[in-house]
Amino acid sequence: MEEYLRAREPGEALPWDHIDVGLSKDFLLAERDRAHGQEPTQDCRAGRCHDCGVCDHKRIKPRLAPAGLTPPAPPPPPPPDRMTYRFRLEKTGPARFLGHLETMHHLGRAFRRAGVDLAHSQGFHPHAQIKSDSALPLGVESLVEVLEITTLGIQRPESLAERVNPVLPVGLKLADGRLAAPGEDLREPDEVTYHLLSPAPLEPGRLEDFRQAPQVLVTRDTPKGRKVLDLKTTLKHMELVEGGLKVVVGRDGGRPKPAEILKAVFGLSQEEAQAARAIKIGARRLEEA
Image 1 (cartoon, rainbow, N blue to C red):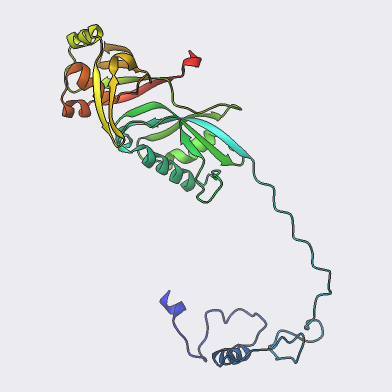
Image 2 (spheres, rainbow, N blue to C red):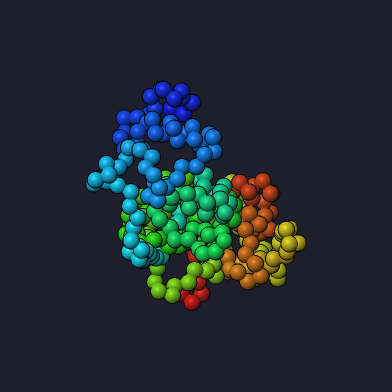
């Protein structure tokens, strides 16, 4: 690179000397000297010839275009069709440690790496049309996230997944792609089902105590202040199954995190609750019941 960009003496060969552009090198050197001296070169179409070497004054000569013959600008090409697709997004393994915004950024970059043209929003700060139905808590895995993307041009859903999956971070995977139905909305589900695998034993007696209690309160400190959730209101179903705990969580009064459930119901320590593996295995909207 340095060899091509270094300064050269006037007599040296230039990297583009092998290309004939019609202009003589002597004319270009003279123009260089005139430019250094701040001397203008008059337009030869209205004055004398500068003998640059382009014209032969027979077939090629200075001329002005007749007035009124400027062709109109071609019409802009029609915008490509925008197509919206839905995918089931799996977020497992190390990907569970990606926050929601980080996950969206990684997905957007993966689509760009795969050469997929995503539609963008309008306005001063356009962003790619890629969104999910909910924000998964940090550290929680999922097999049932819903991802919606809008592309420029028509694509086969299975082809999109085949192109994007190889360039996604480990633990993220697109599956079950399809075209979004007209008018189909994308909103947070009313109920989600978790399978919790705890490193500490879960005592059945504590589950029975929870069922008999009139209320079980969980306090959560947020940037907007302290929030109190009643697990008796929001937990729709909970049972011990082989290998862990199955729990159905609603939205009434706020949605508790899996670690909060394990601490409040089974008395696990903060470290034990955070070490539990939480997998989101189901999501439901009430009108779909």
